[in-house]
Image (cartoon, rainbow, N blue to C red; front, side, top):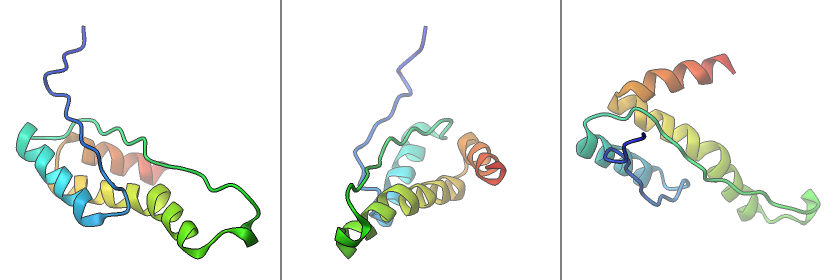
Length: 93
């Protein structure tokens, strides 16, 4: 049976680097370490590239690429088992 005692969830804007760092620091403070991270943030823009607005493109890149990179960096700087695992996985891909 899975224990939910250490399940820690927060809503997070993946385009806000300061918020990402704050949530990771809060998680480490509450749990002592981070073993696993699940981030399901992301979305897609649909339509011809020439019809997309610059701010929509920037938000998609921020959410889908830069946000997860900042999350990995925040976890890495706060330690925890997840940091080493995620660094190795990123390097192998």
